[in-house]
View 1 (cartoon, rainbow, N blue to C red):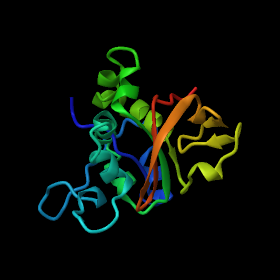
View 2: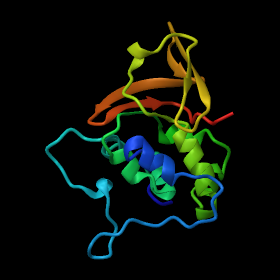
View 3: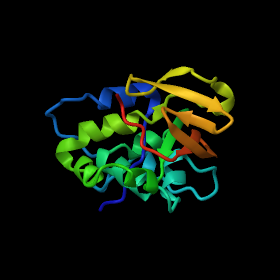
Length: 183
């Protein structure tokens, strides 16, 4: 399986214009001066704080997410300045989905569906737990809402437990134990 998932936004406008669903137009890959791939995701910088994509890419527990991000062509969006808050499902979280779901989603013909699911894990703001209240409704980048739950058992987004958080140069990565599927 190809390496999975990286997420979102080259300034909200750039991403929004690039993610029209239902389009029969093929995605154009960004090309550098030499004809090879280009974009913010390819910038090598070992000195600065890592962005969301580099954090996910460096995690042994997020290979499926990184592969999904690549399959959806969202690498540059997640590498841009943001700010973003990404609720990042672990490989084990993807493993809870019905058999064959991930393999089906990463097929080129399902890129719109995959993008919608990935966008359902992103906020275009820089938020940690202190910004949320129990029962709060939050609108995700895909336009649909989730419910935040904060109680003595932990912090949850539509039932997926946030099991850890990592600060990134362009926002937050909140690790979740389930894939949050749009209703």
